[in-house]
Image (cartoon, rainbow over all chains, first blue to last red):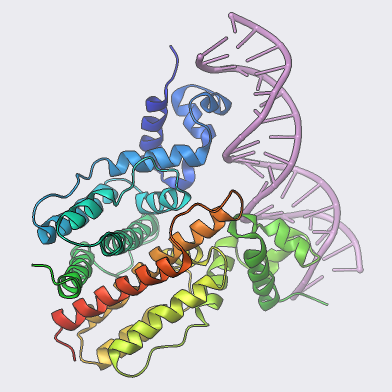
Length: 186
Length: 186
DNA sequence: ACCTGAACACCGTTCAAGT
DNA sequence: ACCTGAACACCGTTCAAGT
């Protein structure tokens, strides 16, 4: 029976988690699906768009923040990091999908809405939400690069997992503290 | 007469600025230097390392921050953004060179030293400096993706140049306000 | 030491032709 | 509509052979 878009995205996620972004090629994806690479173009316009769909699926695991802005936004940042850490090379993937504008969902729409509902102006809400997003993507990209590197070669004695977790926590709270001060939020 | 490493890096910078990262191939770089692609491997171990050297050159334009921590760090963030905006696709380039650990200089060593001299502990200094770096790289990557996209296709009516500048300013000051509060710095 | 020429093992994408 | 087979126009990298 015939393939469909969801099966292609599923298989791409599996290859991503198992072999990483550089090994996620159209030929390899075709092999995993028992099909030639060219056949994939019946279900996907091109590779970039496919990668954007994979990115969207990864981000679908993080719920929109609700409740008081401070714990909500902090929880969102941690949920985002967790969703990214669950899939290999995902921070780079999400960042470039977002950059290309091929994503169907705006990763930052949830937090922006919450902040506007909390009394922030639109541009302040967007500035804060995207600052948090940029920090999270950059931080996780570095974590994932480190763990990619550790897959071969002895582990360098850099930061431990708990150390990068602490650094992450500090970064998030700097932004939230700054926001509370600057926007005089409760 | 024979080529050397600096000429190769120079030519790579020119191609990057003129044609972008995807068109910076070893074959094209060889053409620009009047040489076959294979000959480049006498001066460069591989393409990734070459790209890291290009990233290092771009970052060499941003001076280490000195003076009172707040204006110094803010000035560093703006200088970093300016250096990145001066070279096409540089934010992605710097981010992945940094991720691979092939850079010869640590982009964040200057600010970390300044913050430690200002009384911060090492891990706080590193957390703050890398939070600022991640924010700057993420923000500029998005600016550059937008301008890459505008190179063909009509400009989308998204953010203007001054609007992204304002957003950048907000993000930097959120981090610095947060740091002043959390670390009780002057 | 430096470079050519040619190859190796790949890519993403397209498209006639089959079913 | 969906897929094969084969091609097109590329990649990064290696390496004998020349100078």
